[in-house]
Length: 270
Ligand SMILES: NC(=O)C1=CN([C@@H]2O[C@H](COP(=O)(O)OP(=O)(O)OC[C@H]3O[C@@H](n4cnc5c(N)ncnc54)[C@H](O)[C@@H]3O)[C@@H](O)[C@H]2O)C=CC1
Ligand SMILES: O=C([O-])CC(=O)C(=O)O
Image (cartoon, rainbow, N blue to C red; front, top):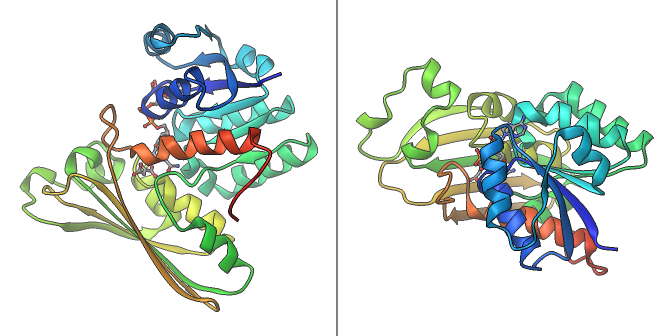
């Protein structure tokens, strides 16, 4: 029996996951989809060879083995509670929601008490393998420096609240510096990866810097970690999703890869 996947959120990431299942890249069945916007869900279903159904959250959870959240930080509490209380496995893309430590602990406890599991893909960054290994020893410092084109940052709460004029920039400009928790609130659709780093490092504070650069065409994430193991530095220059410039294509690929790892008998890497 193939793994039954229910998809919440049919945007840039959701559509790539659906396409990967539809084309057999992931050996699973897309059992149902839902989206705030019914037209978005219907358009996705229409684009697939193997038709699936549009469902509400309750029905989607009932039909699924794994519920994939690819919607928004705001969607996470309801999706996580519904999926885990029903004993279903859960993948979370809007990881920034888990910077709310009360919610994180609730999700962890629900997963444990219902013998379920929560998957948090690497998303748009590299280096989580080494960070997880480093965590077995002492980690001294974690820094994330994210640079995006203004088109990928527009509309973020931090930009609006501070009335930052992105159009006036002529070169790379630091527009934010703060903790992971502050960063995911300030840029909920840009630096979910900060929360992923924070959790992978064992709730170790992450210094997050966000740059806007009108001349950059990639979403760049640079990570520096120092600890007992030594030091590592990674840089990913991500192709932005054509559908959503805030989101990197690699984030969708990481969700697809995580789904594959659930069904593959051999697991590679930490
Ligand atoms: N972990 C990571 O590395 C990354 C995480 N993300 C996050 O993943 C999520 C999905 O990203 P994208 O596909 O690029 O976003 P998107 O904006 O292209 O698509 C999201 C879709 O979810 C729908 N939606 C929003 N709230 C919903 C709800 N409560 N219930 C049902 N549907 C809902 C929207 O109508 C939209 O169609 C976002 O929260 C984004 O910030 C994005 C990139 C990287
Ligand atoms: O896709 C990216 O470059 C990262 C991103 O938006 C996020 O972590 O929210």
